[in-house]
Image (cartoon, rainbow, N blue to C red; front, top):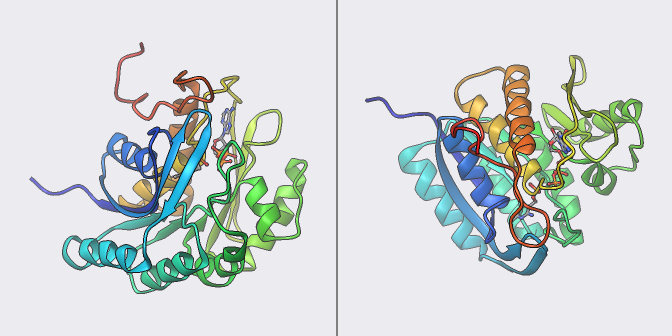
Length: 265
Ligand SMILES: Nc1ncnc2c1ncn2[C@@H]1O[C@H](COP(=O)(O)OP(=O)(O)OP(=O)(O)O)[C@@H](O)[C@H]1O
Ligand SMILES: Cc1ncc(COP(=O)(O)O)c(N)n1
């Protein structure tokens, strides 16, 4: 039997299983690709927030990446929590030597506002990581951290996209999940523009949406889909996962990564 396409996530662990590496691997399973992981940090995390975070040494990150890429090979890479400037730069360097599309989710803070990236790493994200991205997927807070654009409405998303594209990614998805009304994202490479619109689900259990969207894009790219098709499929997958997000713990529960596999509960 032939192997499914391989996708590598380079991200932090969420002990609660809703975001980070855990969300990425579940998304990959649900979308029919072989998920592999390079752990950058470990978080003690649950539905209430992040109680602690510990970074791995840069040699450990490099060694995991080399182990996977040199033997198994990858058809796409996805990055999430990278924690420090040193790790951002090491990962950018590894990706630049890999012949596979890279989806960069420039994770800054958790849904509860806990920092997942040092402020001192922002410049490395702008100058080292975004230039090697095939697709970058900032949310509106990340756009505000990385550029001087503040998005308050859909038309501002165009200015945000231009500002992020100036750092060098081939495509950008500006995620409008934090606006009100429909959940609208803008995908553009500076010439083509795709507005991806989905109904907003009135469900507070949305832990992991950003990780899930980026991993779904990487999974579809690994299957050889063109970027607009990959992002459209990923948007439909994350929308379904949010619709079935469930309560877990006292706070914000996770999206349901298996919504497309399991019969309704
Ligand atoms: N309530 C919702 N209903 C439908 N889609 C949503 C909802 N909230 C977010 N989305 C969609 O989920 C995807 C992730 O967007 P979001 O802006 O939430 O990312 P994020 O901020 O990185 O994630 P998080 O808020 O978990 O850190 C986008 O496609 C966005 O439009
Ligand atoms: C380890 C880790 N990585 C990323 C996120 C962001 O999650 P989201 O997908 O909700 O933006 C998180 N909360 N924890």
